[in-house]
Length: 345
Figure 1: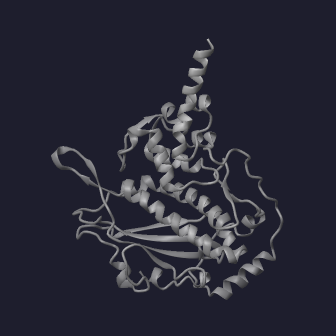
Figure 2 (figure 1 turned 90 degrees about the vertical axis):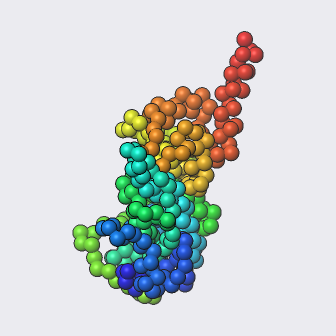
Figure 3 (figure 1 turned 120 degrees about the vertical axis):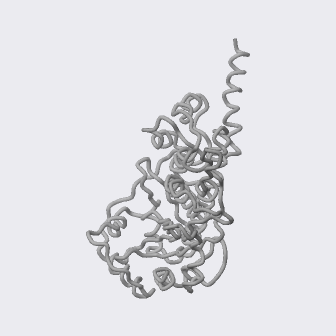
């Protein structure tokens, strides 16, 4: 516990009200005993809990160093995105296996308390905004521990939702606009790619844990910028921001014959070029694929790739809108065209 409670994230001093914050529950995040109480488990469990890490894309972390006045809003966007992604994990990944009557069933669960710690650097002093979210192995009121397999298979979707939410919130809360390329790289409009090369995050050694003072890390970043070399900015796409990038959506599903809800949610989040909120994404998926609405756990129901991609409908109606409230109008387009065609005959 001391790894979390002893690191006061002074590199972010003045930008957040301490590194520890409660997503659910309360207590003093500086006290090991209060934090340890989150790790609820059973007497027979070998795992006490989980450390779930949510890391901002490199391009967004860099903004904390380049634009200190916007740092507080960036960190607020980061934490909000972490919380919404944890909501998804709890709703869809947190299950307990029930093996009564000779059959396995995934029963939904809920964490009694969830605590998180925000940090702003990696072990080499580069800007690296990330959170460690601590949860217990046993859900509230359960007699057994959660199904770890379910947590693992939903992790990629939770990360996609976090990043999509962050893209949206950064644009709403700061002067910056971030977008995701077809190849899965996050960029920020107006930020030269030379900064990504400057703070690339790739080292041969892991490095030692160090607690930076605010003035130390600012001086470190100032020295780093002295080695900055202009590379050029990647131009953003010109497509409609209100619609899904259908090519990116289809590409994210390639390689699978049967598609689950978690894959659809993750693909939709990755195809939201300029971002979309996690709840809005899941609402849209449930509107488009109602047969999968109740899926959760590791044994989710599935549909075929052709049904998942909806290629015929997209060609007929155009790219699908990100906002769930617009999907009804999107579905109506083909009916209107069909009626118009019949009348013209």
